[in-house]
Amino acid sequence: MSKRIEVRDLNVYYSDFLALEDVSLQIEPRSVTAFIGPSGCGKSTLLRTLNRMHEVVPGAHVEGEVLIGGNDVYAPGVDPVLVRRQVGMVFQRPNPFPTMSIRENVLAGVKLNNHKISKADSDNLVESSLKGANLWEEVQDRLHKPGASLSGGQQQRLCIARAIAVSPEVVLMDEPCSALDPISTLAIEDLIEELKQEYTIVIVTHNMQQAARVSDKTAFFNIAGAGKPGKLIEYDDTDTIFSRPSVQATEDYVSGRFG
Amino acid sequence: MTTSVGNGPSRAPVTSTFTDAHLPRLIEVWLLLASAVMSGAALLLVGFNPAVWAVATAALYVIAIGVSSRLVENARKANDRVARALVTITFLLAIVPLVSALWTVLVKGIGQLSWSFISQTGQARFNPTTLEVTRTPGALQAVVGTFEITGIATLISVPIGLLAAIYLVEYALTTSHLRRVVTFLVDVMTGIPSIVAGLFAFSLFTLVVGPKAFSGLSAAIALSVLMIPIVVRSSEEMLRLVPTDLREASYALGVTKSVTIIKIVLRTAIPGIVTGIVLAVARVVGETAPVFIAASFTDNFNADPFNGPQQTLAVLAYTGYKFPGKDIAASNQEAWGSALLLVIIVILFNIIARVVARIFAPKSR
Image 1 (tube, rainbow over the protein chains, first blue to last red):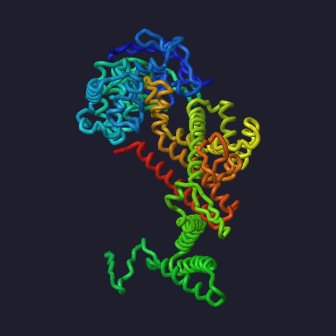
Image 2: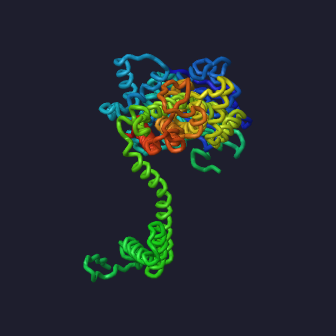
Image 3: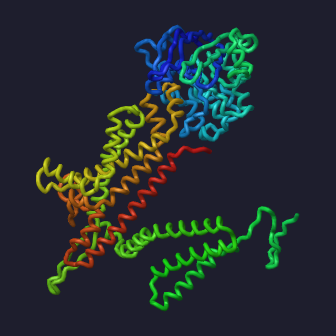
């Protein structure tokens, strides 16, 4: 249950503005890939093009190809809804549905997609998803409490449980720990390590230590200046990026000497 | 240094760089009482009048609190006290008409409220020996008419208004011309005088059905012209309050746009939408002029909103005074009774809306 991602010659536009220029990279199944770079460099944009979420912004469009499991996400006739069912996403701020209980949040993807599911199956799905998100122990006695009653870190793990409950091939994470305290961050990082066994994971982070801790490969993006497009500067094994990068800009960024 | 806080009258003043002279704690109450007594006494000399007394008390109090604070405390505290006095006085001024109207309706209408008033129409009896007409007040036809006309208006307005709001928030691009046109028309419709809405419905039915085509439906259409812009506006505001995060979370699960709107956006916004709808209903249920024009008025019981004149409580309150029957006192009482009944119905609507909003509100524990 995990697919390879291939990005080929991708340009991403917001209306006329070129946000990301000429990106090509390959992401292996069952691995964690981190996108790092300064704000505005297009790393979140690239992440959102992988499940066509950037289209929520009017006027956004792309040139090039994104292949997931060999199928082009941008081929004519592709339904973004079907793409998103296979490519799940976790956002910067925990966003459980406020009107739903913990249990309903986990089942949201299945229920909202109009799949009929028996009581026993849904019980199993809730338990396995929450266990998969390392949250089961903490919430098993209060599954019917609102999702908003949890702490920030627990809410984020609830969102991960909600994302993996629809059994995606790929899980995208857009700065999943930036709103969390260090202990919750550690819990999420441990979780990413476990999820790697089953899913292809792509994570955007501003925290270089986090990228070094959790990822197998790292992509560094940079931007020449305001109004210029973001570019992929270097993409390599995480160890290489952080110890002996081949581009000076990468070394400056990961060592804190930039600008 | 020690700060001693004693309770006796001889307590030493607490001094530090943070303390400053201040007036006693209950100074406002004492000054207010003093102002009331002094202005009251002065008025007794020239003739007492409660309204003048209230104004004089307020003015005297503002001056007294300002001067005493400036003498004892400092300019900043004096300004604060004067400003506080002024906003309190203006607040009281603002609620005077409201309380006065409610009180009058309550006092004059309470005697009319009885089961027979609600459950039967007004009936006149002619006494052949004394040649007097006596009337038993009744408002059944108006209660039924109010619920039917307002109900039909709500059934027309809510789907149109809610769907228009969904279009504006979820579908129309910010650059869309249609969106601008719709927003502009909604703004214009909000400002339409209610009599114009009544004339619109009346002439529409005159053209389509024929002359004297009074009906509850016609009045309901007039009311929905008034209601739709309110529903659009309030629903639009509520839908915009739903965080984009939630829509994105839903899309990211592979949920379609329509299901996202229904199950996530509307579900999250429903308490506010319901409140907006009830406010719109409360706004039109008391409309008199458009109903009077479009449905006319009647003392006869008519539960068919598609044929013949119908009465509402607001219209009954008007006609009971303007076009009383032979028994003028009874007609007037009927008017007060129906006015009170109308107020009670509006309050009930508001309570129901609060309960519904409470039930659907997102919970955090």
